Amino acid sequence: MVHSFPEKRHGKAKARRFYVVGLDFRLQTAPGWEMENLEVVAGVRKILIAPPGRGFVPFPEPPRLVIDKSLGRAPRDWELFHDYWLASDRMKILLETLDLEGVRFVRCETRYRDGRAAPTYWLCDVIRVLDVVDEERSVLKIDYPTPDRKVYDLSARSCLLFKEDSVGAAHIFRLRFYPMIVCDEVVKDACKEAGMRGIGFTDATKY
Image 1 (cartoon, one colour):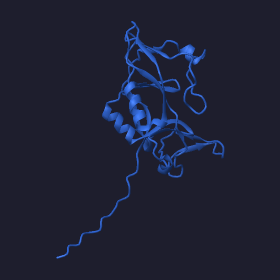
Image 2 (image 1 turned 120 degrees about the horizontal axis):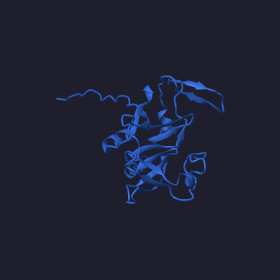
Image 3 (image 1 turned 120 degrees about the vertical axis):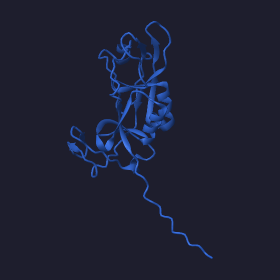
């Protein structure tokens, strides 16, 4: 007797999910740390700003991070610091493992106020910048829509959808026309599994 089996149907591939990377605002306590040589590293303006094309300019000396628990909490795995992020050693390892070409780091010399050695932290920059928003399918306002310039206005409720073919193998990137970092579920799930503290994720379709 010959048995016939129904033809196997291949469903449509599941769409990747993307998230806006930010801070976990559920954890709102005062930071107890500072960069003691900020004026040397950043100049008299005391503001660290990424150069054109992102990344880091050569610093005259390593950034020196001082943790003072009398002022507040120690840094978490992911902290906003001027135009960059401050990342723990394990966050650096996670991001470089998942997407080495998308990130750059500069090591900080880290100590406690009393001189004891402290856990390692790094200045982090997401250097990959992509023009991958599917503007026709997304819900967003575009200002100055000229061939050479445009700015996404996300002041109102927005829904950002992406051209997955253009994103390719990237797991984390910046948007070209809006100062935002985006990652896929690979980064989000890895951070959750590792118990990373301080980092927050917002569904890009509900931004």
